Length: 138
Image (cartoon, rainbow, N blue to C red; front, side, top):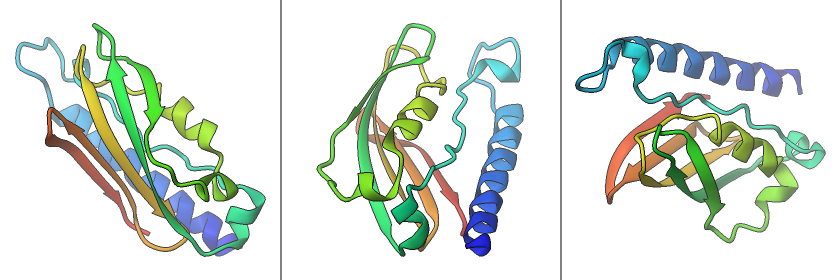
C-alpha cells in the first residue's frame, strides 16, 4: 500500500511541476503578465477504502462552463459510470475542478482517466477541438 501512496505522490508532484512551468511560459495574447492565463492543476484523486485495495481504471466525462473571468462556475458529470463512486471520492474532483481558471465564457468537455493501473490523463476540449491534454505518468 505504501507503493501506491508513493506512486500517487509522484504523479501529483510531476503534475505540479509541469503545470507550474507551463503557467510561467504561456501568456495569452494581450496579457500583462504570464500569470493572467489559464490555470489547471492536477487534482489529487482521493480513493475510497475499496479504491485503495482494488486494481482499477475508470474514465469519467464532464461538461465544464466558465464565467466572464474564466473561473469554473459549473461542473456536470455526463458519463454513467456507476462503479467510479466505489473507488474514488467524486466530490473531491468537482471541488478541484472549481479552482481552475480557463478561457472566459466558454464551455468545455473533459474526460479524466485514472486508477491504480496506468497513467492519469486529463483531456479537455473546447468547441470540438482539443484544448489541453495532460498525462501524468504512473
